[in-house]
Image (cartoon, rainbow, N blue to C red; front, side, top):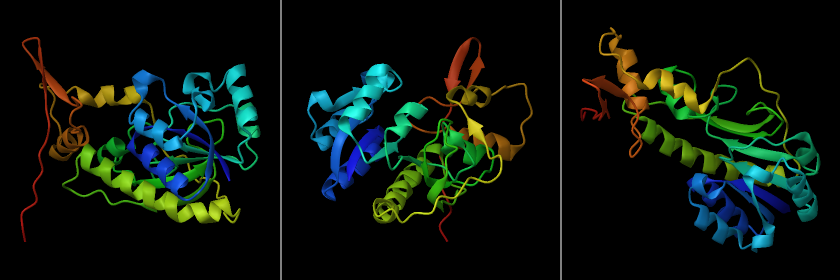
Length: 251
């Protein structure tokens, strides 16, 4: 199929490279702007596309972006860790729709930092492949799988396992998707949704507040994701960041 790829980060690179290895035709690539790119050079190299076939994500909802999508004539769009919403004009220009690989068990943890909120709010963790609509992670589900949250998980370790689960899910679902043999399942229930700034309300640890032990441990481990700073407390005008190390006793 003619694939329009919209992606970022390590998982985006791995999925794009796998599609290329399967012989799929990558006809267009939409990338985050340079300051937001992760694994940008690897994604660009894997695509094998000339600069004229690359679109910056900030242009996707402009007239130039809509013209670009129509010009590359994709059969399907594949979105992986892509942080920009698509409008109806773009979606309608892709005959078989745009699918998104999201590292949460939808409808739980739409939006940002699903690994954090599965630990802090005890919501199911997992990965989902779904069709994109004009909202945030609300489209019909194609396939999904659960990932257990272990008591020794940090935000980093859970995220890494979600990455691997997402790649496995995509690879298993793609043959059915490319054959047009998928069943669209509407999302059920309200679920949860978070924006990037939502972690601000948990990151500052109030030294004068009494926390249940489980709540405090869950915040600290959920926000342990080196090299990012995460949770902190303030003392004498100084901000001190915390990371939690969890080691399970050997049986």
